[in-house]
Amino acid sequence: MKRRPFRRRLAILFAKLMRWLHIYLSMFGLAAVLFFSATGITLNHPDWFFGEAQRSVRSEGKIDPKWLHLEAPVADSSPEDPADLSRQVNKLDVVEFLRQTHGIRGALAEFKVDESECVVTFKGPGYAADAFIDRDTGRYTLTQSFHGVIAVLNDLHKGRDTGLAWSILIDASAIVLTFISLTGLVLLFYLKLRRIPGLAVAIIGTIIVLALFLLGVP
Image (cartoon, rainbow, N blue to C red; front, side, top):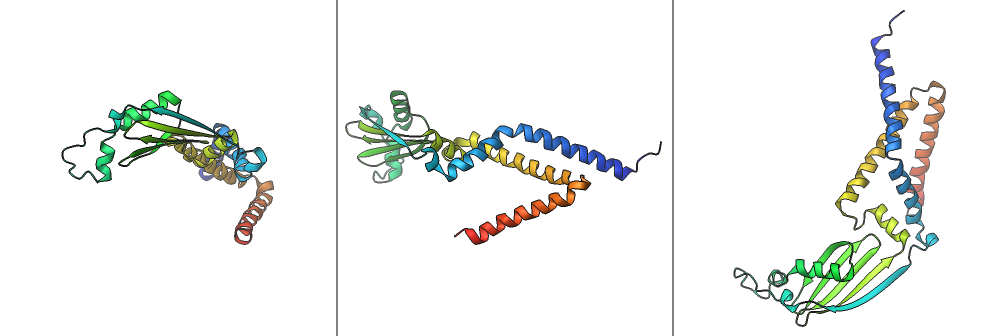
């Protein structure tokens, strides 16, 4: 039996590798691709799914004033410096107290301190919480805003207030989808009967996208 040329054998092995990658990357990234595809629609049309619905809950309480008036470090000699004021507050205890007392979720987004008040902000997908604390009395008001499920999904799609782990997932999903597209394009060159029609459809699709961008985007 005549042995195939080395270049031919190499091309066959390469085609097998591309087919293997295309199939299993598609299956591996199936959930992520479906999620970002579906939420692309909800993100573009939030009003279709009542994505703007919002519920707010207002609470009041009191924090130990000692947490709000710690002694500033000796090295910080200027009491008017905002950095000094921030060091006069036990931020960790304040944040943990608010979380445990009111079941706050989301990450700490901001902690502002001035001479009379502390403002603490938490944010998460479809969620926000703002606490205004009087430094003299320790009394505070807390407002939690809950958006609908669609708003949560949209924030996940955009990676807004989702943390490092979800950000990595978005990047990984983009890489997987890129490889799926490229391996599919490579496989097309090994299908003689579909090569020309497939490339023609790809070119037409690219032209349509570019035309919509150039002519339809303000």
